[in-house]
Amino acid sequence: MTAGAREVMVNSSPAVAANAEGEEIEVLESTEVLPVAPEDQWKSLFDKYDLDNSGFISTERFRDLLATHGSEIDPHKLEVLLALADGNADGKICYQDFVNLMSNKRSNSFRRAILQGSRQLKGCSLNDEVGLGLSQRLVRHVAYETLPREVDRKWYFDSYNYCPPPWLIFIITIMEVAVFMYYGFKLERLVLQVSSPSFLKSPLPYHPQLRAQAWRYFTYIFMHTGIEHLSLNMAMQLLVGVPLEMVHGALRIGLIYVCGVLAGSLAVSVTDMTAPVVGSSGGVYALVSAHLANVVMNWSGMKCQFKLFRMAMALVCMSVEFGRAVWLRFYPPAFPPCPNPSFVAHLGGVMVGLTLGVVVLQNYEQRLQEQSLFWIFFCVYTLFVLCAVFWNIFAYGLLDVRLPPPP
Image (cartoon, rainbow, N blue to C red; front, side, top):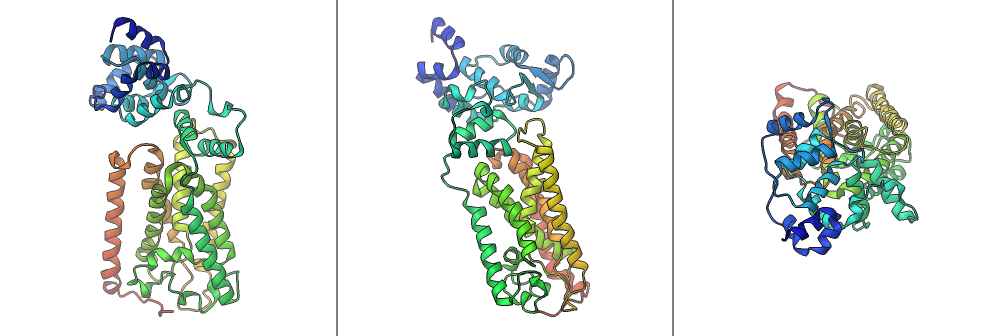
C-alpha cells in the first residue's frame, strides 16, 4: 500500500477505510494477531502508562502504547481496538480491557465491528437513539439489563432479530404451569398441594427411597408445593431468565439452568438425606444469582434503571421464597414419617450460579471452551456430581440412614 493510501486510512473511520480498501478486511480474517506476551509483562507495560496508579489509562496513552509496542498494526484495526476498549465511553481503559485487547482475545468482535460499519463505533450512547419501534426498545432495554459494556450492547442491538425467540424458558414455564394445573384438579387443591397424600405418588418428584430412578433428579422441577411456590418461581424465572436467554441464547442459559437443577437435587441427597424435593428453585436460583453477581461485579458498567432498588427487590423475593421453603421443611408433615420437601436445592442452585453461571454470563460473544475459568468450574461441578453419585450409591447403606417409606 502506498504512503498516500496509508495516510487516508489513518484519517478515515474504520468503516470508511474498510469500504475503500476491501482487502483490509482480510487482515481481520487472517490468523495474524497482536504480539502476545505473558500477563505480567503486560502489567509492567500498563503500569508505565498508568502514572497515577488509578488502574486506568486514557485512550490517548493507550494509543501511544500501541504505537510503541504494537508495530505494523493497521490504522482501522487500531481504531477498533480503541473503540472496543472504551466500552463505557468514559475515555479510559482498565487493566483487564488492556490485557484482552493486547492478547487479541476478541478477534471476532474486531471483524464484526469492521463489517458492521461506523455505527458500531459511534461515540453516542445506545440510550440516545430516537425513533425506535416497540420491539427495538425492548431489545435495547434487554441490552441495558444484562450487558455491562456499551460496545456489546450496540452489537447486540444491531444483530438481534428475535430468531430464534427465547423459547426455552417459556416452554419450561408452560410445562410447570400445565403440570401444576393437572395435579391441582387431580388433588382438588391449589394451595399446599404437598399436604395431599397422593402428592408424592407422582413419577416426577425426587424421593430418597426412589433415588435410583435417575430422571427424578431433573423432573422434580415440574412439581410445586402450591400456587404460592409456583408463582414466586415463575415470576423470577420469566423476569430474569427470558432477558438472559435473549442475550446469551438457549444453550448457555439452559446449561446454567440444568446444572442448577441437578446440583439442587444432588445437594439434597447428600445433606438432607431423608427429604424429598419439588420445585424449580434450583434452576431459578442459579439464573438469578448468576445475574445478580454479574451486576455487582460490573456495577459501574451496568446502566439499567433503578438497579439498586431492583436488586434489593430481587433479593427480597429470593429471601421470601427461601424462607417459605425453610418454614415448610420444619413444619410438622401431614403424613409422617416422610418430611416435607427440602430447601437445600435453593442453595445448590445458588452455588452453581455464583461459579459456573457467572463465567457464562461474563463471556458474552466469546467461546466458553476457550475460557480456562469455565473449564475449572465445570470440572469442579463434574467432580461434585460424581462424588454425589457415589454418595447416593454407598453412603445410605454405610450410614444406615432410616428413610421414610416409599410413597
